[in-house]
Length: 150
Image (cartoon, rainbow, N blue to C red):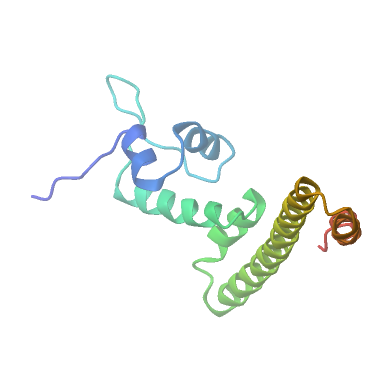
């Protein structure tokens, strides 16, 4: 006879990397199906299928995917070719978002680097070079103020 493994919310949190509060929230908003409760303690008891789902959701969460998109992704899983096409579209959209975030992060890093150069130049007393760097910093700052692409 095969015993069914069960996990506490703490164990589910450790296995998925999601905080317990996030697991509770995802259950509340219906991203995760209602988790069974222990008869006597009323504590949540996760089974293997629950853990597999939670780990999959944790991976989607790690990409920054919205709850709405995670919900769509989970619904598409068993829809054959049509579902596969929807999955591809969802993931390509998420990839584009991540690419834009990466571009913006690199821009922010460039701004910090140039400000470090600026203050090092100020500290060295080279006012002429500091003015050149100041203008470069202003150009990066303009790009940082532009609306992010969607």
